[in-house]
Length: 357
Image (tube, rainbow, N blue to C red; front, top):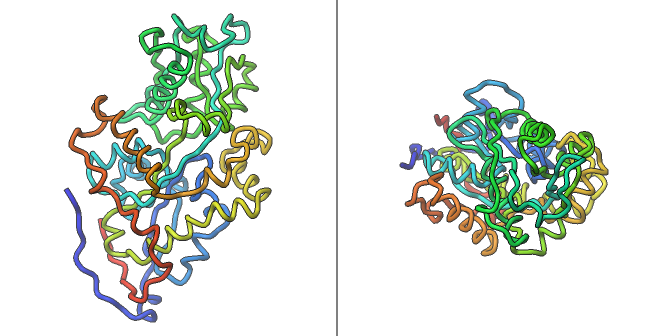
């Protein structure tokens, strides 16, 4: 199913500037993203101040319809940089989104246990119970992330999923505040319901320290970046756009993609400012952000559509299909609009903004 708006007439710049602003929703992960850096710097408002668009963060509303709409990509005029598994699931659900670019976040992943646990290395996970979250709703991004990570960790430890038992942690809706799922995992570990759990990124480092947990093993960003066996620990992100909005406003979307593409260069040129934005975005201390991301802040902010990135998306899709999280017939070629990455910044032909539902 594809939703295509009617063709929009061209208008003069003066006429366009007098049109009422159309609300455009944007959403991003509460960690390290290109969208997060642009949002904190006010780039979305400055870059498009002469255009009839008004960018509003999904975080600025608590409406259930908006929260659900950004997860399943049914929200009109939505641009989203977030978890790739959710993006694939939502495309399989309604085919409303289009893929613009792909990003990787390399950050520390901790295997944690109670302070008095006898666990001392990954080989000792055999025969243990591992915490595995399951969010409410028809799709659980946290479960996909944790299960893929556990599978990679078990693999490098010479173990198989059959060597362990998973304890299901019932969590809230995927739109609940960042850190809630991690706290539930900590509760399960500290109460003895699970022998070990996983904590991700700077927030995970902070929570492990606060709870006084034993760190059985820390997979640093550099470890994950250099070892192909640890791909399940990479936070794979996708930049997606509402298809009707893209069709009606391709010039504006192209400029947005170009602006997001410059985030990595900005982070490389202004590392202290970038670190400050990232710490504020994740609501963590700067030292924890440094430990979590290491030297990979600019690289983790980069967006692209190179063969390696597309191969990682294909690998995730192949992982999701046998688990019936996406249709077996889902085809990435129909989803992709990564051609906009190489588009010129401005188009001489200006399209009017169509109101689309």
